[in-house]
Amino acid sequence: MSSRIKIFDTTLRDGEQSPGCSMNLQEKLEVAAQLEKLNVDIIEAGFAIASPGDFESVSEIAKVVKNATVASLCRAVEQDIDRAYEAVKHAVHPRIHIFLATSPIHMKYKLKMSEDEVLERTGQAVAYAKKYCNDIEFSAEDASRSDKAFLAKVFSRAIANGATVINVPDTVGYSSPEEMAAYISYVKNNTDGIEKAEISVHCHNDLGLAVSNTLASIKAGATQAECTINGIGERAGNTSLEEVVMNLRTRKDYYNVDCGIDSRQIYHSSKLIQTITGVPVAPSKAIVGDNAFAHEAGIHQHGVLAERTTYEIMSPQDIGIPQNKMVLGKHSGRHALVDRLTELGYSLNQQEIDDTFARFKILADKKKVVSDSDLDALVAMKLEPANQHYKLDNFVINSGSKITATATISLKVDNEIIEKVSGGDGPVDAAYKAIDSIIDKKIQLDDYSIRAVTEGEDALGEVIVKLSMDDKKTVGRGVSTDIIEASILAYLNGVNKL
Ligand code: KIV
Ligand code: ZN
Image (cartoon, rainbow, N blue to C red; front, top):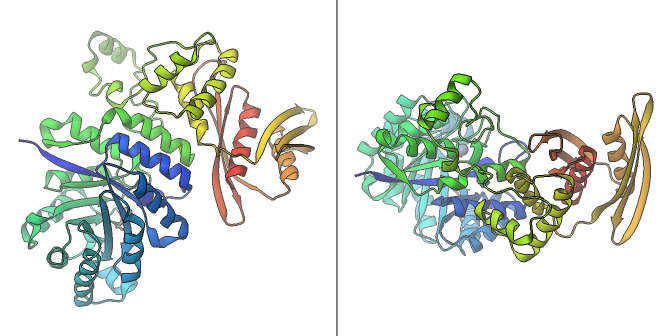
């Protein structure tokens, strides 16, 4: 009989810690709702004590998530544990996730604690958290560089004091698959009370082995895998959820393990994270990259046409890649649009349907056929703050190889139209300078990228900008068939968020 592995998603905590991946409250709620659709078992919503913003997002997520367990990370100190519980206490299934390092290097240089002190602190922290809730995860940070016998002692102490999950992190991505498997087997065979606890694994990708290390750990007996969508996370990232899940599914014959993930939500989840963070995945990325199901070589194409399984071990439908079954165009009505969006996995409220339909009509006037990818882009625009302070009213651009580019921009600001003209180094720079002079703030453009959402001359262009102002950073996104308009919309989207 196959066993069931739990999928612990830490996109909103470890994932959000990766450079350029920070999300605001509205975006985190959107991600949490998608993680529920994906059917993950545990959502690590944040590190409650890290900032008031982190606390608020853990707490708001805890209030709305229905099925998954909601966890907050905390250090092994009372004040952190209090804050973590305060944030998750409204969850249907709350979890407190305590971590404390166990490797000689971390204990000596970071914690300045002896083995005995770490053991003592583990017991105290878990017992303290247990007063609040039953579900307690204990992580031995840098476990994969810890002494195995000491690690098992620490885990025994954690379980004796009430830990229900013990986690073996490869914090610095140092391990090999065989070594990770050996750690899991050792812990399984040498930890007192282990039959009462889940064994979790949490890997980082510094040497490109996070997924392999996680799979080897599962094979060795881990019953919970910690992952992030698209593998985002500290430094080189965490274990990619979609890769682990599709390995387990595609190679069920080898792993003999099931998980509860609805794999048809994978593509959608990946796109959502790319849209929100502005961090695209590489075209060659396994499972969700643009080329993951593209067959270029003639011999492969021929094989796939004759029999799909000659060169395809998974089907695009398995991960929910849109199949473009129905063509939408300017004559399509609201019903057809809503039907298609539902098939694509969206559940929009009435206001969002009205907004998306209005944008769809404008786009359908410009394009003959509106594809599923276009629809993804249109729906993603709903992530813009509802009450935008600055709205684009009009723009005129003058540009050429022998003249200085100028932009005339008019924005609607609190029902007043304000117009400014500015020159610049190209049309986008001129437009951004004109916007800066209207809003009268110094915004720094840290990054700008543009891509076509679909193929063809009438493709939608998507612009992603990364902006900063003082110590705040944000991502802005704009979509249009006109790339200058997309650039302006992306900038305004970011400015409104800031
Ligand atoms: O990488 C790590 O060790 C962690 C722990 C806090 C679980 O993220
Ligand atoms: Zn981590």
